[in-house]
Amino acid sequence: MFLSEPGRTNYDFQFSLFGFPVRVHPAFFILPLLLGQGFVRGSDVNAGIGLVLVAAIFFVSILVHELGHALAFRFYGQPARIVLYWMGGLAIPDSGGPWSSRRSGSLTSNQQIVISFAGPLFGFLLAGLLVGIVLALGGGVRFVNVFYIPIPIPILKGTVLATSASAFLVFVAGIILNILLNLLNLVPIYPLDGGQIARQIMVQLDRFNGVRNSVILSIASAVLIAVLCLKAEETFMAVFFGFMAFTNYQSLQQTRGPRW
Image: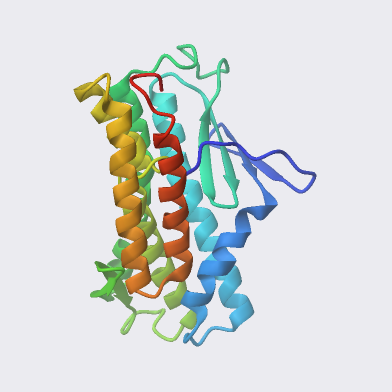
């Protein structure tokens, strides 16, 4: 999500996935603990177990998102590594390595657009997989507006999971997180994926003013989302997008021509 890699700690968890080095910063689990309370509240799942389940769903969801970016990097001959940290994750291109067929920084604008879109695409596919599992089990879905967006909520009645509150929590949280977070990630706010896509497109259309125009669009979009979050009484998200509007405004003061 953000472009600055966090420093290493003695408590990092590291492993490899499909040949990609993955590092999990211990602060990664702050956000799922904050968001998880909304999913657990009102459910029949024990609060502690529920938070663990939501944290696990969040971990898989962000990992799949970043895997989409990393696979797109690899497709274009650029090796990458994945870092999960306190506000999401990063897929970071590396130079050299067994998958390298180009030097770092040589990707074209269109290739960078594809790479930026690949993360949300994988998130949507994961949400679709969860919906598909529910339907394959004989269940159904109903649509509920979440942040003004219609989201399919699973109906497990008549399935082998009908009496499992934990299973219902897993499917609900997995579907909502993977649809909502990836849709928000496509909003043209820098440095979200949508903001990076908008920047590449605007620079293609106007080489001199493209970056500045993308920052202006980013500020307007962040303010709009912050206002909508306030109306929905989602204070944390309102503050988050308000902060992004502020940081983009700071960037606007430094933007002159095609220097980025």
